[in-house]
Image (cartoon, rainbow, N blue to C red; front, side, top):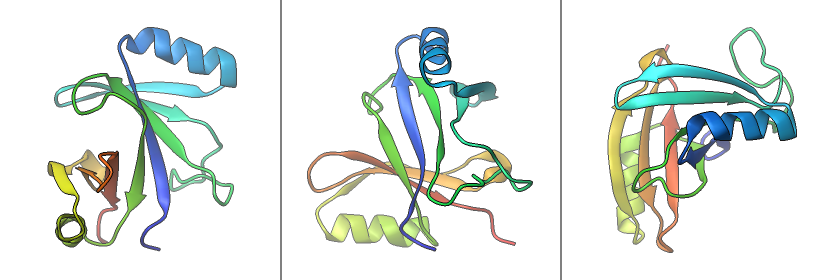
Length: 129
Protein backbone atom coordinates (compact mmCIF):
# COMPACT_ATOMS: atom_id res chain seq x y z
CA UNK A 1 0.00 0.00 0.00
CA UNK A 2 1.54 3.29 -1.08
CA UNK A 3 1.63 6.27 1.22
CA UNK A 4 1.77 4.67 4.66
CA UNK A 5 4.34 5.62 7.30
CA UNK A 6 6.65 2.62 7.66
CA UNK A 7 9.75 3.85 9.48
CA UNK A 8 11.15 6.65 11.64
CA UNK A 9 14.65 7.96 12.19
CA UNK A 10 16.13 9.83 15.12
CA UNK A 11 19.39 11.70 14.53
CA UNK A 12 21.76 11.70 17.49
CA UNK A 13 24.87 13.68 18.37
CA UNK A 14 26.09 10.68 20.38
CA UNK A 15 24.76 7.34 19.04
CA UNK A 16 25.86 5.28 22.07
CA UNK A 17 24.17 7.67 24.49
CA UNK A 18 20.97 7.81 22.39
CA UNK A 19 20.83 4.00 22.08
CA UNK A 20 21.15 3.66 25.85
CA UNK A 21 18.47 6.32 26.44
CA UNK A 22 15.81 4.72 24.21
CA UNK A 23 16.68 1.20 25.36
CA UNK A 24 16.48 2.12 29.05
CA UNK A 25 13.44 4.41 28.85
CA UNK A 26 11.30 2.47 26.33
CA UNK A 27 12.82 -1.02 26.18
CA UNK A 28 13.74 -0.75 22.48
CA UNK A 29 16.20 -3.28 21.06
CA UNK A 30 19.17 -1.70 19.30
CA UNK A 31 21.23 -3.27 16.51
CA UNK A 32 24.12 -1.24 15.09
CA UNK A 33 24.89 -2.03 11.46
CA UNK A 34 27.78 -0.63 9.43
CA UNK A 35 26.67 1.37 6.40
CA UNK A 36 28.37 3.54 3.84
CA UNK A 37 28.83 6.95 5.39
CA UNK A 38 28.80 5.71 9.01
CA UNK A 39 27.00 3.48 11.47
CA UNK A 40 23.23 3.08 11.44
CA UNK A 41 21.29 1.71 14.40
CA UNK A 42 18.12 -0.29 13.82
CA UNK A 43 15.65 0.45 16.62
CA UNK A 44 13.16 -2.36 17.16
CA UNK A 45 10.14 -1.02 19.02
CA UNK A 46 7.73 -3.86 18.28
CA UNK A 47 8.09 -7.62 17.56
CA UNK A 48 8.90 -8.70 13.98
CA UNK A 49 7.53 -11.51 11.83
CA UNK A 50 9.60 -13.91 9.70
CA UNK A 51 9.88 -11.19 6.97
CA UNK A 52 11.27 -8.64 9.45
CA UNK A 53 8.03 -6.62 9.37
CA UNK A 54 6.15 -5.53 12.52
CA UNK A 55 3.66 -8.18 13.68
CA UNK A 56 1.21 -5.61 15.04
CA UNK A 57 -0.84 -3.67 12.44
CA UNK A 58 0.08 0.01 12.47
CA UNK A 59 3.29 -0.49 14.44
CA UNK A 60 6.62 0.66 13.00
CA UNK A 61 10.27 0.29 13.83
CA UNK A 62 12.97 2.80 13.12
CA UNK A 63 16.58 3.74 13.21
CA UNK A 64 19.17 6.18 14.44
CA UNK A 65 22.06 7.82 12.71
CA UNK A 66 24.69 10.42 13.50
CA UNK A 67 23.15 13.88 13.51
CA UNK A 68 24.22 15.84 10.42
CA UNK A 69 22.58 18.19 7.98
CA UNK A 70 19.87 17.75 6.83
CA UNK A 71 19.18 15.16 9.59
CA UNK A 72 18.77 17.46 12.58
CA UNK A 73 15.40 16.25 13.90
CA UNK A 74 13.17 13.15 13.77
CA UNK A 75 12.16 11.95 10.31
CA UNK A 76 9.16 9.87 9.26
CA UNK A 77 9.50 7.62 6.21
CA UNK A 78 6.68 6.94 3.77
CA UNK A 79 6.54 3.82 1.59
CA UNK A 80 5.92 4.45 -2.11
CA UNK A 81 5.81 2.32 -5.25
CA UNK A 82 8.22 4.52 -7.23
CA UNK A 83 10.62 6.93 -5.54
CA UNK A 84 11.48 8.76 -8.76
CA UNK A 85 7.80 9.45 -9.52
CA UNK A 86 7.17 10.52 -5.93
CA UNK A 87 10.11 12.96 -6.05
CA UNK A 88 8.67 14.45 -9.26
CA UNK A 89 5.32 14.94 -7.52
CA UNK A 90 7.06 16.49 -4.50
CA UNK A 91 8.77 19.03 -6.77
CA UNK A 92 5.52 19.81 -8.64
CA UNK A 93 3.79 20.58 -5.33
CA UNK A 94 6.48 22.89 -3.94
CA UNK A 95 8.84 20.50 -2.19
CA UNK A 96 12.41 19.60 -3.12
CA UNK A 97 14.59 16.50 -3.14
CA UNK A 98 17.32 16.55 -0.50
CA UNK A 99 18.95 13.14 -1.02
CA UNK A 100 18.45 11.16 -4.23
CA UNK A 101 17.31 7.56 -4.52
CA UNK A 102 19.90 5.36 -2.79
CA UNK A 103 20.05 1.57 -2.39
CA UNK A 104 19.87 0.32 1.20
CA UNK A 105 21.32 -3.15 0.80
CA UNK A 106 18.78 -5.94 0.42
CA UNK A 107 16.03 -3.78 1.96
CA UNK A 108 15.21 -1.62 -1.07
CA UNK A 109 15.76 2.08 -1.77
CA UNK A 110 15.43 5.35 0.12
CA UNK A 111 15.40 9.07 -0.65
CA UNK A 112 14.69 12.24 1.32
CA UNK A 113 12.83 15.44 0.51
CA UNK A 114 11.69 18.65 2.16
CA UNK A 115 7.97 19.25 1.91
CA UNK A 116 6.34 22.61 1.11
CA UNK A 117 6.72 23.59 4.81
CA UNK A 118 10.43 22.69 5.06
CA UNK A 119 9.97 19.39 6.93
CA UNK A 120 12.43 16.62 6.12
CA UNK A 121 10.61 13.39 5.11
CA UNK A 122 11.95 10.04 3.94
CA UNK A 123 10.75 7.81 1.10
CA UNK A 124 11.15 4.03 0.95
CA UNK A 125 10.56 1.47 -1.78
CA UNK A 126 11.01 -2.24 -0.98
CA UNK A 127 12.92 -4.45 -3.41
CA UNK A 128 10.91 -5.76 -6.36
CA UNK A 129 10.11 -9.46 -6.42
